[in-house]
Length: 260
Image (spheres, rainbow, N blue to C red):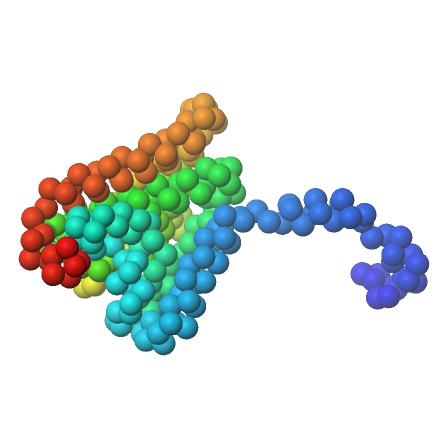
């Protein structure tokens, strides 16, 4: 068998292989971002399911039945009490490009943030940011709701957490790729129509709040439990805030859409 230097006989190559336990440890060491990979798999899986149900889902502006069933839309929340949309909307996308941009950003940020905190904390951070994006989208849309979907609110939350974490460590984020990405994405958010400004800003704020605690530097260390409690509290506040705000809106004109 060919080796790095020269060649080895089959018996020597077999004897040099690590045992099963060692190979398992090596494999686990390489799986540094399992939550990121899992979230990407869910998003891609949902998109493939949408395409199987309706090939129009691949287009950038087509609205399919899956969008109607899962997207964030205030009248469905208020009159049909479909509050699960606060979460499901974060896993639905408008076309392949929408999905590709969000998954690329999720992969890049996940490689940085998930390696800095425990996997469970990273998952909590992601969902707190997603719920923050949902609240932000509802607040900005007000009484002129539209179907809103995409992982960008959660991705902006990771971006906000990374920026706050670097800042707390004394790093000027504008000397890093994080600062550049933040400014570029904010410019895109405000300059291109059809993008959920509230969703992006809501996710950014929620992620930044979580990141202040979860990515605190060692010399400002916070209790470990705070890294779990803070994103749960932020997520819960976003859910309650969404419910209170939506129920305060007058959406009578949209009742015919909900079957109320």
